[in-house]
Every structure is written in C-alpha cells, then in structure tokens.
Image (cartoon, rainbow, N blue to C red; front, side, top):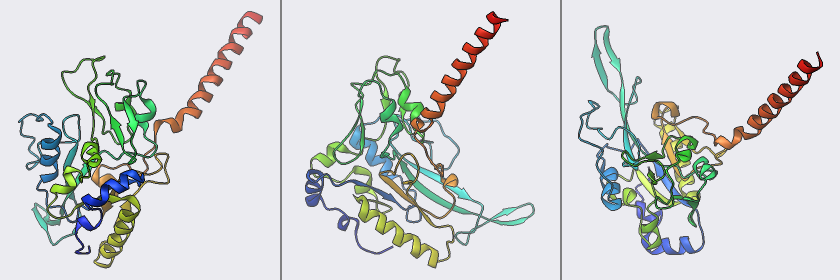
Length: 285
C-alpha cells in the first residue's frame, strides 16, 4: 500500500466539514498490514470505558476476547489459513504443511440497510449524519430484536442486564469523537495503518488499489469486501481480504432480515387460506 499516511485520508481539521456536509465516512481494514497488537481493542475499551471480558484463558494465542460482543466493540481475529500466503510451514506426522497467520480487526459494519435498525421497536437505534447506526442504551428496552436481526452477529446484550432494562451494545463509530472533529479511537491507535478512516468513496478507491497491488504480489484471491449488491446495500466498514470471506468470519452475502418479509407474509396468507378452505371442506363434508 502507498506510504501515504492515514491522516491524508481524513484530517481532524477536515472532519467537522465532512460532518456538516453529511459526507458518508467509514473504515477500511487491511489484515495484511495488521500485526495483531490489539491496540485498536485497547483504545476502544479505554475511550468508551467498556468493562473487561473476564480473565479466562481461551487457549487461542492471546486472543482472549474471543469475538465481538457487548463489551468488545473492536476485536482482532486470529485467522489461520491452510495455504502458503507467506513462507510458513507447520510440521506434522505426514510431513510439512503450509499455513498462514493473518489478523483482522473486526467491528460493527454500520450497514446502509441495517437489520438492527429496522427491528428496533423503541427508537433506541438511530441513523446519524455520518451514516453510522448509533445504539442508545438508555432508550433500549432489552427486547433483543436487534441481536437476532444483525446479519453479522455484532449486536449483543451485556450479561447481568435483565430484559426490560436495556443492555444491548455495539460500536458507536466513536460518534462523540467525530462530533468534536476527532478520528475514531481504533483508527487513531493503529500503528501500521491497518485501519484507515475517512470518506467511503476515498476508502473504496484505496481498497481497490490495494487489491490490485496484492494480486500483482501473488495473492490471486485478494478482494475488497464491500457488500453493496446485497440487501444491506453496503456497509461503512470495508475489508481487504486475501481469501474467502468465510475464513475471516464474514458472510459472503449478508442480508437484512426484512428481505424475507414478503415471502414470510405470503407463506402466512397461503397457510391461513389453506386452513379456511380445509375448515369449510370439513363442515361441507
């Protein structure tokens, strides 16, 4: 990738003007640049004052947060691929087997057509002027509809919070930082520019250029994860991938649950009609 610094994508001075002009912003995450330091996780927890996830050892290197959740809004996934993306080999009984380690910093995708936003009955989830989906816990009634409606499994309820008392949480896109002209904490803390923040159009161009560069360097499966052709209509978190999305825990074709409403209603109507016909047939017989 170009040595152009992340600040050239969006500067603190320019951020307020982007917000005022309602320019849509987002993240571009490149796992080929990530060193797994988890600085983004730490910065996110510190800025948002998130509680710890417990101190039980998972056995997966030092990835003890495990996954995105109510208390982990940025999570660095440790991904092992059975393919020689780098000159690494692993000894085995049958000889040496190639493998590759990659790290991907995952986050809420802030979908353009967000299933969580559509499912929320209380207005706890709102669309902000920068295009993000903000979850207001003080308005949340704890129903959990947003949890099951998220196609990426991002939204989660915090343990110990009873239904009816709120408790759903996810990444806020550092909305409070953006409102005062600051870059989100995770992107600001990343030491390798694996996480870039800025206008989505600029990030897409940057992502496409990076994919071409990786292809030229021998990564035939390189792609930009940007699901604009599905019912989520695009996300505000783009990813440069060097393998299939499934290997990184990303659905290849994410869909908002409302896509299935039409079929569900037709099924219900046909079932009701069949029951009515069957009832009349029984009495007519």
